[in-house]
Image 1 (spheres, one colour):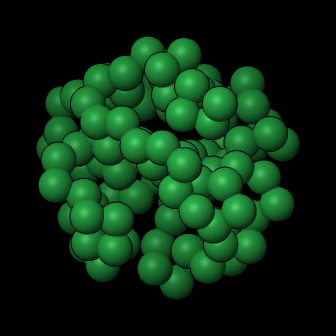
Image 2 (tube, one colour; image 1 turned 180 degrees about the vertical axis):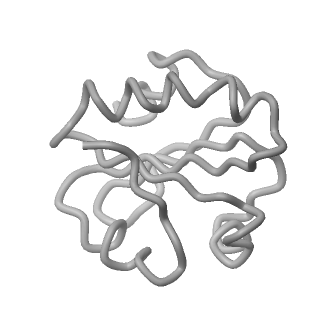
Length: 103
């Protein structure tokens, strides 16, 4: 399963009602570190298909969602289980560091 483009319209369905944990990647097209993280986020989505749902939020297009999570800098990664935030990390991260948010 590839990453899901998360919007304020599909947020409830994709995150709040998800049966599996969700990773949200807050990013922007002009953000170099965000672009550097893209292959890592893609790999997490591929390797954890059915175990972790990976969603991406373009902060320029979805400022409402960015505000809801208090996003001040990007990239920001938010781990959610059962509709509740269980971890957050900022900046360029290793795949392992991102996955550790779910432990």
